[in-house]
Image (cartoon, rainbow over all chains, first blue to last red; front, side, top):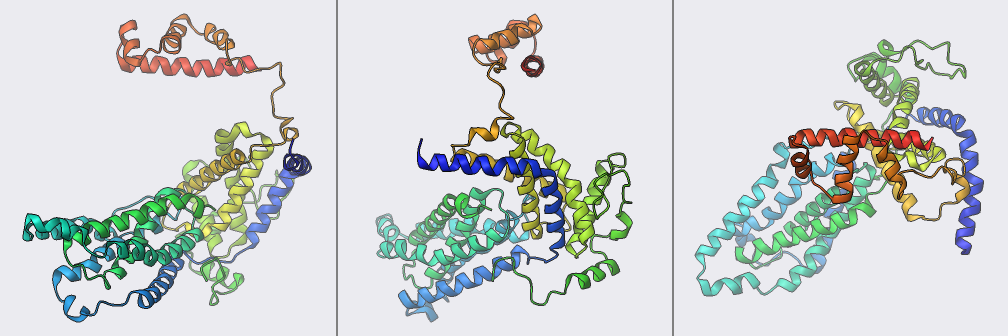
Length: 237
Length: 238
């Protein structure tokens, strides 16, 4: 028997029987102690929006230090296809805010409403952009457009830009009470991926939808996966 | 800045309480739902407590909980204590049903964990939503959490369970060959049905064919048989 097991055994033997004896007393004590605490914690939504704003500040700082706005930003974002690049990310990020908040409340029923509209628009916009670009390009050009030239930069920078959002979302969600941590973590991950991509799109000069639609979506999905994987550990309470 | 700190602009408890009685948020004034102190409660708590005799039915109780918890949010300590006391038996029931195997002291620990969780996470309940699903979700989560914690710390001192562990001679009769004794006590038709599944791995469809009944009827019979088995098993342990 290991030392650890012995210490557990003795400490447990000391602790638990006492609890059992005092259980009825302690329950009343507990209730009166709890009921005397009349402080009102702030709602999760407030903490969440604050945390996202903080995440945005940190991400923006990272962005300006490491990447910076694309040089031709003023003209480029007047073109619809290029303007849609950050919008894709924003759709994913904004659409996930209310679902994340809903799942931060135990037993809350998910109602699909207007605040989830961005999530419905995301695949439509993505398919439209991708389809139009596919038609525009000749068969020989498609592959090189899809692979692009800045993929390694994207794969490195996009998660880094998303992370402050993810950290903020997790910290705020811990203030709530997530009873479905995988799902909630996944939503938080998707949200962070969306905002991270939106920021990255301000730097990225690869303007073919064959590049940015699949890779941006893959980046968002990867962040969702990371969020779902981290959720059970990060969102425990 | 994100944790549950007090809002700096927040008024003191007495202030919010007065505001609450002036214009109740939950639609029902806390005074309307206040239940008279029950004189028959022996250990006379400071706040009124509902005696078993006046335990309201489910609909009433839902409304009471809703009103109490809403009043508690506005600083009504008595209503909060009443709410917490009143939910304890319900929580204990759920915990017992889901974590009965963990033993008496663990059950009470989980009940207290749930109460603490209710308090810590009280801001995650919205006044326009029913309080019961919220409460049950928290309880379920804490029960699962207790199992998980127990699972990860596999070395539970056996002394703690001395009172709850069955004595060696009262072995579970469904273990091993003893299971046959329990099945043998079933009505012959039910026993045949159970054995067909256990020994021959028959499916519902097989049963329906063999007994010449519909699949639905086979399902019902199987359900009854398993229920009866559970009863038998319990009575045979005792």
